Amino acid sequence: MVIGSGGREHALAWKLLQSEAVQEVFCIPGNGGTALLPRCRNLAMTLDDYEGISRLALVNNIGLIVIGPEVPLADGITDHLLAQNLTVFGPTQAGAQIEASKAWAKALMTEAQIPTAAAQTFEAVAAAINYVTAQKLPIVIKADGLAAGKGVTVAATLDEAIEAIERCFSGQFGAAGARVVIEDCLLGQEASLLAVTDGVTIRPLLPAQDHKRIGEGDSGANTGGMGAYAPAPIVTPELMQKIQQQVLEPALAALQRRGIDYRGVLYAGLMISPEGQLNVIEFNCRFGDPETQVVLPLLETPLAALLLACAQQRLAQFPPLKWRSEVAVCVVAAAPGYPDQYPKGAVITGLEAAAAAGATVFHAGTRLKQALVTDGGRVLGVTATGADLEAALQKVYLAMQEIRFEGMYYRKDIGHLALKAEA
Ligand code: AMP
Ligand code: GLY
Image (cartoon, rainbow, N blue to C red; front, top):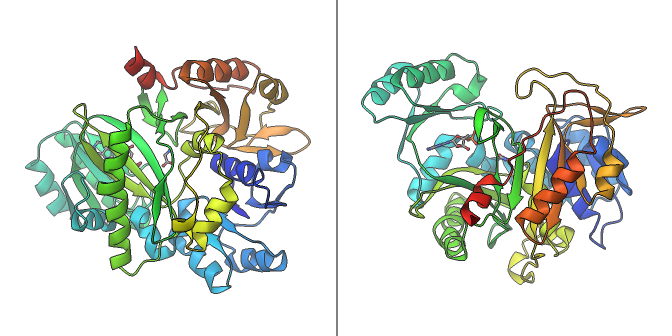
């Protein structure tokens, strides 16, 4: 069973169905893409209906439940399902704090000596403004809690910083803004490293890079992610080793010291300076979206077996992960107006032609009615693999030309940082 309705969940269901051991996948609630997947069934339930979800899982003998988004994890869905003796991939509420409270995560990183930006936490406007006034610019202001990607401001001026602090405490983010974390600004290139853990052992997946900004050249407003590629060459094998030793293992040890049995994805958002210096920007308690759409197509190891080994705390005995030696690229097709207001219900065409052109189309915000229609800001994640980045890009953009819906927007420069590095 996969919980969630985005591109990440479509990719999870798609990959799980490639595992021999998996007969069928239930998606709660799923989307138009999972509705069209053979052996996949959408069930229209709300993500906070823990009773209903656990009953359904028990009645149908579900062998593994994979939780996609952070909100149900932070709300304790895993605790509830575990109490019903279900098998779950995804941390408990205590573990999900690593994403749900930036102050909590910062304290954990400091204690574990994980490289990260220096920061202070504040619970009142005056003290926060006082502090920020004495700091160097730019500076980063973060709402403590979950704010659907809108809680972070990288402030170039003192006015911007003060405005961000006031916005946080204004109640705009609800309880998420009751505390504010103010931290030094890190420079460099970002990368996403998703690792899987069973609470005792932690293993990295391939590094990825996503493109958060709406506009080409990484300009304009922040979004949920406009595209991604993997592996990200900026994360060299030496850096990978450093991440394992200086980030993943100390983070897991610090979770253990807090009595947290963390089974799921630990996602490290990294900043890599031009000198190769490593810092953690944030941790997430789940698979990345759209990183999952480029990491999973490269995984040769059966996903169901891997996630089950995590859920059952058998990861140490699990064979080394096998990866296809290719590059995967995902380009997001968004609705017009995203990340602000956007229309829904536009008819989508050309997906068969895109598949014939070699792409795998993961649905992010679609719904299957009489026709397939748009149902979100990020609509599709068109994904292709190739022998190298150029080959994957060529395939993905050719496939993209087949797809149509009114006002469709996508970035033409996914992977540009890696292409630049190669040149
Ligand atoms: P988040 O919403 O927590 O994923 O953060 C959004 C984005 O803010 C990150 O992807 C970074 O681009 C940026 N960011 C967060 N913290 C820092 C920092 N300390 N220095 C520079 N950029 C940051
Ligand atoms: N792609 C960024 C995230 O999943 O948080």
